[in-house]
Image 1: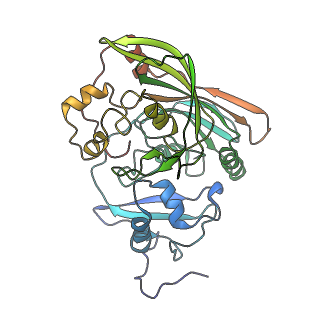
Image 2 (image 1 turned 45 degrees about the vertical axis):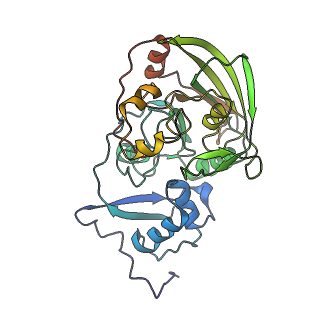
Image 3 (image 1 turned 180 degrees about the vertical axis):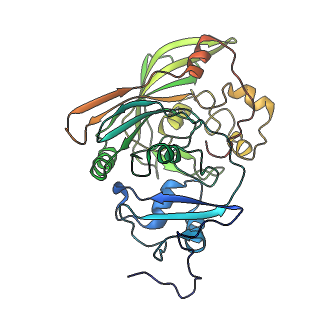
Length: 344
């Protein structure tokens, strides 16, 4: 039976097209989110918004064939949309390089600057939207996430069972991931580890994380220095990163904590105020010079996990992208305000 709220106006129906000046952002619940509260599910998809704000959106702007409340438990295949005012959407990459494809999996090498899921800022220029437009809505769904600015491997499930198995693998840490990163400075040791608990939220940025020995969750990352180099007289290093846990922004905050922040990181880099000004599209030219790259220098380079169909371990690799190779080689870097300024 449909749930009903006497104090709410009737929800707009999905068959009604969005009026002029509005867009509908569609969501299809993946198998690994079965049984989650609706507000928690959307909080995972739109991390910039507070739970209170998400609950308001559900009550006022959610479109579905049945009445949904923040407390409604979602199920695989549930389709709904969020209606919002249309804004000028920043340009995002449109290429989707395919690394591997079979009846169960689609593995992509996501370019930097492409968000995975629709957000308040991005509704057309996302990996999910590109997948749906090119292959159909049921072709494949991402099983995990990467930050918009992070490039590299994204694994998608192509069947309900594949999505369910992949979701379980990522939650149970049965997925081996390796990243390549360029950091500021020369770490003195060729290998080092950071074991520092991570908690969500900071005083300046709600979606950021912090090192917190009291409230933080266990977090550990191993690092290997692959190359030390200088650029414009400044020291940098290329690192291979092995996250042993899967916390949000783990590699970025761990490198920041030991004094070797990622090149280009507006959230955990040289100035904690950069991200706020970047989000408001008013980051000063001097800050862009200090950041050195228009995006943070992090790339998901390798992933290995049991294939959801055969259960045999499969491994996929994505080479370091051209912009990071050019930075290491000392070539000029195009800098300046990033038009996609609201979702680092």
